[in-house]
Amino acid sequence: MATQHYHLDTNYLLSYLLCCCDKGDRKDHEAYKVINSIFYKGDVVVVSEFVFGELFHVLRRNYKKEVFHKLVDQLYSKDFFDDRLKVFRVEGDGLDRLASHVNEIRRADSRLQSNDVIITAFFLCDETSKWLLTFDNDLVSSKGLAQLLESRGKHIGPTPFPR
Image (cartoon, rainbow, N blue to C red):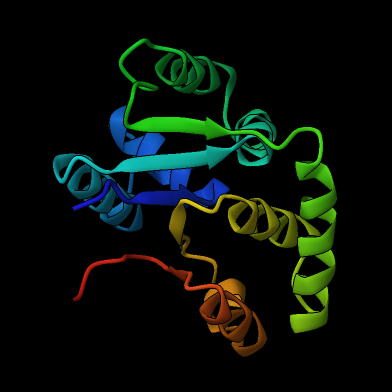
């Protein structure tokens, strides 16, 4: 069976990171379990460069200096990003596709926040990924977005595994 790729949104990555540093709550532990299950299956977790940048903004804004440094140190440890956790970049002609996806998503659901639209557009640019993992209720409950993703064979939600 081919290796599956799963994109994370910012809060999902943050939840995983908090659990890696023993700071997570119940929701964070759910993300931690899902991601570790993905790793156990030999699959790959993907984080867009936008999510990576947004994560630093969230960490800087919401956490005290000591916690911020601990989380950033964990993020940059050689064990955190390996062959199973990759950063997805869009360059060159891919930028035109990214802009096109932003417009498609806006047409599918104009109520979504800009950062969520951009994260989802990165996900659509990655042809190897089938899931965008998120706890964001606006994304998960958007019927227009669900239809757009379904038409591309992609899915969105808090877990790819049956509950």
